[in-house]
Image (cartoon, rainbow, N blue to C red; front, side, top):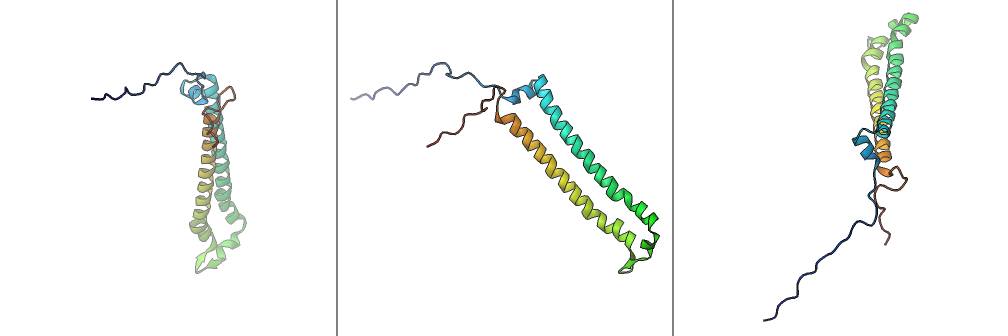
Length: 135
């Protein structure tokens, strides 16, 4: 009978490169650097929310003032309905939809740039992951 040779055994040594610390570790362990990253994201999101709220308040909040300053608008009718009703009952909703869509898109951009910042490089300036090898 012939015996098959023993299977290959892989012998490995210690890692050749030091382990890389990512910025994600700073955030997970509540370090001052991680607090700075999260704080910058929160400030960006708060600033965006404040700007969107201001645009909404000026856009919709100024309508009663416009109706007060121009009382002739109440006399103008479209399809038998006064223009102020059209503005408040119909035109306000597309405005709010577009404002909400803008907010969501910008908030997602802030979050994706934050995620890219956290995962792209470690504090030493090296990539947090090995770049793909070229063929």
